[in-house]
Each structure stands twice: as C-alpha cells, then as structure tokens.
Image 1 (cartoon, rainbow, N blue to C red):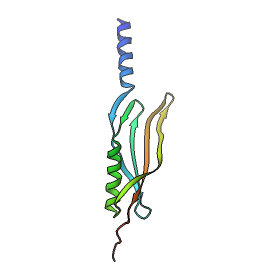
Image 2 (image 1 turned 90 degrees about the horizontal axis):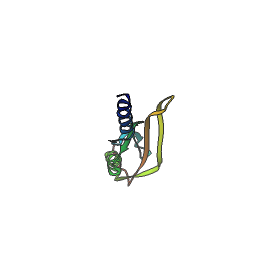
Image 3 (image 1 turned 180 degrees about the vertical axis):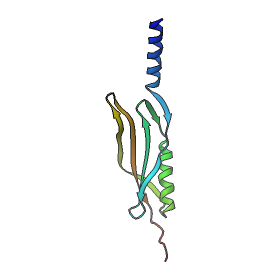
Image 4 (image 1 turned 90 degrees about the vertical axis):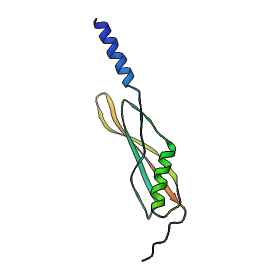
Length: 110
C-alpha cells in the first residue's frame, strides 16, 4: 500500500513539474518620448509558459499607436530573472522585453 501511495505522489509531482500554462505579455512601462514599450509576464517554477509571439507584438503596437507612432519592433533581447527562490531553487520568474516604437509620432498642437 505504501508503494502505491509513493508511486501516486511521484506521478503527481512529475505531472505538476511541467504544467503548460497560457501566459500573455502585459505592458509594464515605457517612454512616449523615447518611443519604447516594456512588456512582461510571470510564471511559476513548475509551469511551462505558452506564449503567443503575435500577442506580444500586438500589445506593444497598441501602446505605440496610442502614442502616435505607427508600429513597434523588438528592441534588444528578452530578460528572464528569478523573483522568488528557496533552498530548492527558483519558484517564480519574470520575463521582460522592450519594444521600439517606429514611424513618425504625431505632433501634438498646443
């Protein structure tokens, strides 16, 4: 009976170790004058994030268009950092990406 319980616990642990979870990029900042948008998502140490690259582009593009630019492009790389850890390793991650707004921004009249 103890072996069955141990096998069940092991199967549950292995199943949780790689749970695919849908994540979305969200805007966390940026600069209208610099024409940059910062996006991020977070995930747990036992999660395997599933992302739509197009969703990230759309999110950055929406922010840029709201500022008067016409589009957005990835700018630099993606930065991943551990946000919470314990003696067993990292339990929470944050991933950030910066996008550059492109196209001429609309001039605001005073």
